Image (tube, rainbow, N blue to C red; front, side, top):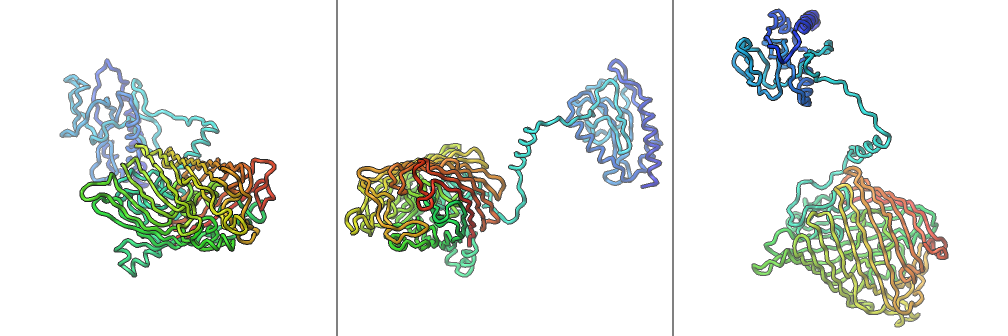
Length: 631
């Protein structure tokens, strides 16, 4: 290669001489074709591995972006006996070559372009390159060549570009955009496959980084018309399926998770009325869950299918999921910090048609104990955006025991009618109250909006068992009447917002709600019945969640609105209005492991009421973090 450098330098000198000898172009003058000296061709054919391929790529890019016509081009032809990317110049004469002229490979490498309309004296064939070089710019350059070969009459295709100055705001905005679009390469997380599973429902509206890809209210179970998205992705069920194929054959799954957490804040003893993590400044097991389930196939519409679910929960969270009659003495009599609760225990039947007649888009019937449907938040950790819950979630219905029926009218309308034994009450207790419910879900055709609203509990009867026991009011049980409204709007796959509002009321209720007859503990609870509130007591709640996807493994949750209006102290024991704000982050290390730190501030808006830390503080600040490990 070193021996070729003098030869290459000589070729550059000859090329420059040809450039200066070339007459200026004028549209009124004839263009006399010229032929490169044979010596120049021979010199270039001796160059091996020269950097012409880089020049060709630059020329092609410049010509593609240029809209100037005509262009001056120097044609190239692959030299014989050279490497595939080595080229030598056959003719260094500039050729007028409008962009609209279609160049084809002709015999003897001739150029025919009707737009030039050459005179007979100019009809000599001119040698050209391959057809893909027809729009090459007039510049022939190497790393040592800086002077472009142009015509004075034609505008140059190479112009110096200066990078425009950007304001600080523009630069910051661009950086933020790039940051949001960036995947930081954190290993391990494998979101559900993007290839759609069989489904009759509209496409999943939410990104897989969030707890669910579906609209709220499905209680971690696939909505009608959507296949179960579990598909044996958890280690325990994979191992059991391998050892016991009958489980795989019947789609019976056994899996679970463990959910430890910690919190530290300004309250020293109790975080109530914050729900779930009531013991302040502690490390605790919130949930250790083992689930058995079979999800019916609601995508097919040819035959009935069945399913069931049994969710066994142990941990501190049992204090809020407990229903009277379901192992409830742990809480209502003993006031234990941790305990066991079978928070879900139901069977279900999917009926697509009767005989040959379809029942709209399908009917699904559920019998047993199930989680109350309308909330944004759910009782089980993997189904929630944040570790902690809103204040309004603390005091509404958690579970119901009865019958639910879902009728799918079409892809956009779903009706639910049910009948149960009262909010958080088993039908075999002395607090049973026959209660009805009716809910409607609507989804927009563009799949970006959903409204979920209706009556969750309605019977018109008073608070139960306030005077039948000694002391009066012991074993008293809430009889919530509740209406809900949820609205979800999806801006894009990265950003969506959910808002919920509810109204609660009861008649002749007790201050503080359901009675806990156990001993008073430092973390709260116990102490027997509260004072009677004559007539109707009511409460109103409002909460908003705004969710932002940051990477495929991370999302940020804002809960900027969280209000509970409890003017008579029926729900919390303190007559005031509560306000809270929370910001949290979820990072998924893998599809089995995630962590959720958050900071939260809350306060009583009534200056004379101090509901926090066992009645000693008006508000509190809390840092909390939990971990969810599936198995």
